[in-house]
Length: 187
Image 1 (cartoon, rainbow, N blue to C red):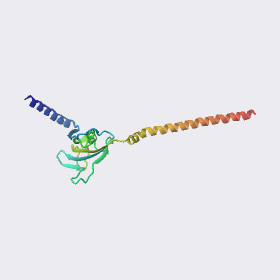
Image 2 (image 1 turned 135 degrees about the vertical axis):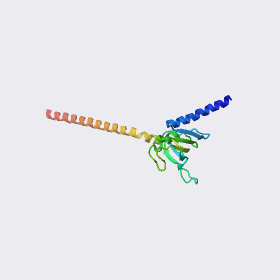
Image 3 (image 1 turned 60 degrees about the vertical axis):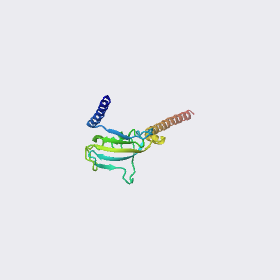
Image 4 (image 1 turned 180 degrees about the vertical axis):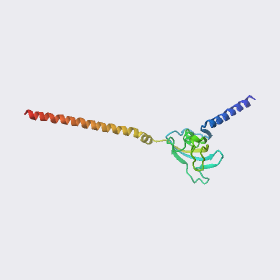
């Protein structure tokens, strides 16, 4: 009896949490499958490839990346670049290759008040996603991402040093010429 009550309370808490999440318009993430090896997880900056099925709350499918004959490739994007809806950005973080998740995305993390194709405005979107590939950025990739912040100031410093040196050299030259002229006048 105690065990039954504990399970019942746990179930009520879980259901209450989902209902509460929907009321607050929060992203709901349900893990459907985790592979045995889940050591590398997707994080901002990683390039990911994802297969998905997108549905409306009514169950109507509005898009999918994988056709029955496997004629479509997964969608590829870099996490953190805002190339996909915010619900995907948040819902795919932490996934590992082979993991399946269900993402229930409230309108403000989807397309909002904007209709998108056959998706009505203010729609809650339900995606089943599978992470197919995960590519961590290489050292060169991360360097190229930060290079504008390094190269720009570096160029400014180099130009500044060049101008300072040129100005001080010109000043030294003028002083030298004046001395020579004074010495010629004395003779």
